[in-house]
Image 1 (cartoon, rainbow, N blue to C red):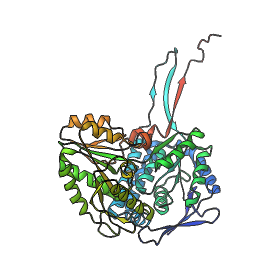
Image 2: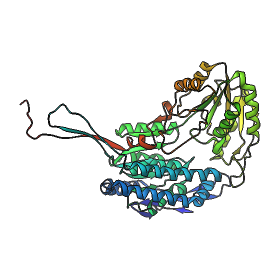
Image 3: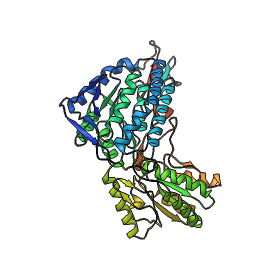
Image 4: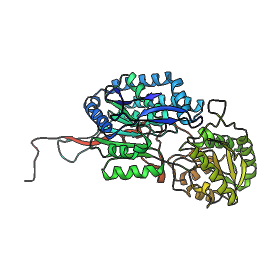
Amino acid sequence: MDISLLIDGEDRAASTGRTYDRLDPFTEKRASRAAAASLDDVAAAVKAASSAFPAWSKTGPLHRRMILLKAADIMDAKVVEFTQLMIEETGATAPWAGFNVMLAANILREAASMTTQISGEVIPSEKPGTFSMGVRQAAGVCLAIAPWNAPVILATRAIAMPIACGNTVILKASELCPATHRLIGTVLTEAGLPVGVINVLTNAPDDASAIVGALIAHPSVRRVNFTGSTKVGRIIAEQCGRHLKPALLELGGKAPLVVLEDADLDGAVNAAIFGAFMHQGQICMSTERIIVHQAVADAFVARLAARASQLPAGDPRGHVVLGSLISLEAARKMDELIADAQAKGARLVAGGKRTGTVVEATLLDHVTSGMRIYEEESFGPVKPIIRVADDEEAIAVANDTEYGLSAAVFSRDVQRAMAVAARIESGICHINGPTLNDEAQMPFGGVKGSGYGRFGGKAAIAEFTELRWITIEDPGQHYPF
């Protein structure tokens, strides 16, 4: 499939004529051929978005709502096309692709509902005869940088609320799924979004740094949002800080699932299996550390290992739970994590085998600090089990990480679980549920190395608008001199 840039409502080749190929990670055949944007294309995209902003920012909320609602329906109708692209470009399974489209369409619907919620307030003033207001207005051109792992969800999330708030956007597609991300631009264009409101740039991997740097530095770009690794997020944050541009960053995670001794073990096992192995563990909220009270650890691990051993892995086009990892490099990292942990005393209780880019659901018991799997975000289906003596140790282990995105606590005593949850350093925490959960209306984001700012619902309005203080005053007021 050949992919063009979307600039000013037009399908365009790169100004240089260059393209690059994305290979299917499982078959190693070409999945897509995409235009490799140049710095001239960056300038053209920003110009298009800037030109479209004055009219779009003044477009009424109901008109914006209707376009976003229509886009949601069009997205739902393209589920087969999105699914094929996700399988070929990222090695995803069909169920994961279908979930992506479903949630992304709901993100568009939630954004549509927010167009009339961009409200302000009247603020009492000390000055006689003064009417003082806090007013939210569209910020301008927004740069959205989306990843490959949940490509429809995360790219749609990156642009839906900015558009709902009256901004124009440039979506910088992931180099690993250019066709998937470009199709989102098509969805919004078909829904009737005016020319220039949505622009999509694809770029060759070697050009990513220059393209992103130019986009952030451009004076017309007023907001940046990025979802991806903490390593790259730090670079984005530094560049945004240099140019004094607000950034919303949703980065890596090392989500703990804490199982206390009074937990419903079957419920905890179900949540751990889903949270750890959905999409091969390649989700920022994936369960990355299973922290279990030693009193129930043997029983819990036995049940968990039995379940994990039954999960089929293989060709994502087949009837499997675990498909392909995003690359051979990512798959080989799983080998390294397993070998390191075993060399330092961990015990392999499930999985451990790899065939090309497919890795079995793998569990390592008796993991301790000093092992790579204890500290590093695996972003794959290799998960550590850490045994603890009490609540205090569970909390300490849960917080012993640079990350702080999602977490979960299992206990039949909800008050106890709430007390533990309150002390876990994360932006999200679920009691008696998996670490992996997302709804379009929820405030989504992390703390510490997992970033800052919030996507979702009303919380996102603050990220993509300017809050201004505006007054109406008495022209005949008295001045001191």
